[in-house]
Image 1 (tube, rainbow, N blue to C red):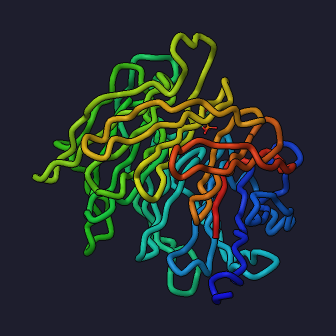
Image 2 (image 1 turned 90 degrees about the vertical axis):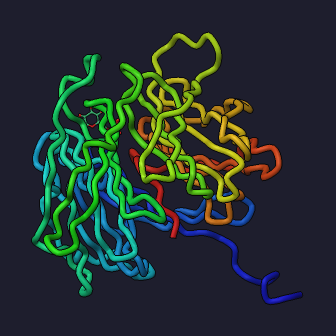
Length: 352
Ligand SMILES: O=C1O[C@H](COP(=O)(O)O)[C@@H](O)[C@H](O)[C@H]1O
């Protein structure tokens, strides 16, 4: 056998949670090569670490603590084999931080849902969060009851670009920024702002590996909207595709979206119907064809992740206290249920 044959191909992952019920903080699990789970236990006690990210070298883990209805915080932890050691905690620059991401320079973006603010902060070389932050508040509103004011839901560093994009469910728009490197402040580029279809409610997005297409998941009208990156640096809204079966009339709130590393299949979770919508991506046009809807075997699939080898998809169910795993067919994109494990109020999955 070759060295590759004997490699351990199981994948550890962290789970962020809401701590309003049984959960105490951040947990760790392992996904084995047959798609079954092991529970590696509580790693850190911390209040509602609803979203997680790693530092660039994966030596630290950073959590967004959604301290509803108060000012939220961001906490940094040192990673060790069997626990997370608390480093420090900073205000998140707003209320109900529900998303954060880190780039190769350990800069951090945080979306604060309650206050509709986008925050930039820095993880320093010593693994502690800096005290200097920049906060930008979105303005405006949309046309539905959930859109009475700004509600930032996620933010991303756009690959191969200096641009940052923040999705605001409340203002129904995508806000584009750059970071001024000398002042360390976020600079808004209003000419690039995109307004989604009325009542759409943009929540999360995923980037196609070709750097041309971006797929935005809209929570309120349950659609995926393709955005095209233009050669002049701008962005253009293209077609939208429903994440629900034809004729579906019950309540549904789309939550999370991911694309396979080869860019061939796109997945979106639907809270309510409790399904993963599976789409094939046309390699020439980026248009989506619906391949099916896989029941997730739990309630409220708020977050999911593809395993690092793309062979499995793991779903976190906020309202049924469980994680489920599915084997992914790389040719058809379809999913087959494999295993289930208990997890308290899981809201985020982060593979090592
Ligand atoms: O704090 C809040 O945030 C959520 C958004 O989070 P999610 O659970 O939908 O991801 C929002 O729905 C809720 O009303 C608000 O209180």
